[in-house]
Length: 116
Image 1 (cartoon, helix red, strand yellow):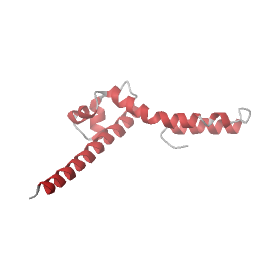
Image 2 (image 1 turned 135 degrees about the vertical axis):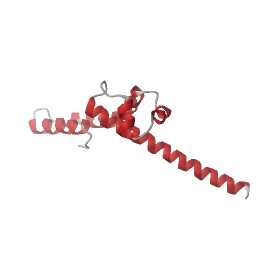
Image 3 (image 1 turned 90 degrees about the vertical axis):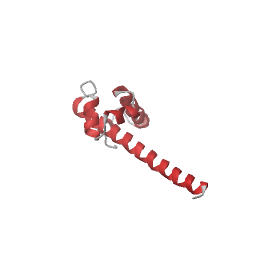
Image 4 (image 1 turned 180 degrees about the vertical axis):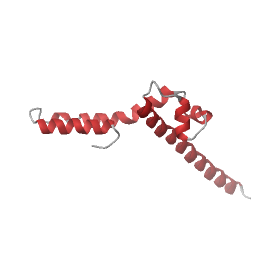
């Protein structure tokens, strides 16, 4: 087998491992979101998150330093959505009760995980 062929096989394996690692990280994030929503951040435990994600504690800690690191990443992902939504506010006529109500309903939907 040529060196180039071995390199191609190795890089393919690395891409697969990276994809698996990213999938595990995403499962942990989605599980943490669900656990935080169900139990609140304070009450949630790493054990509940790993059980929800179907991963080991070692897998959790290979991706995150702890529960606070997960929350920080979730907030960083959410922040641009929230900022973009708040930028719509100046276009809402404060005297138009329906428009204000619709904007607030959209904000609540955003926090509930639905796109307004």
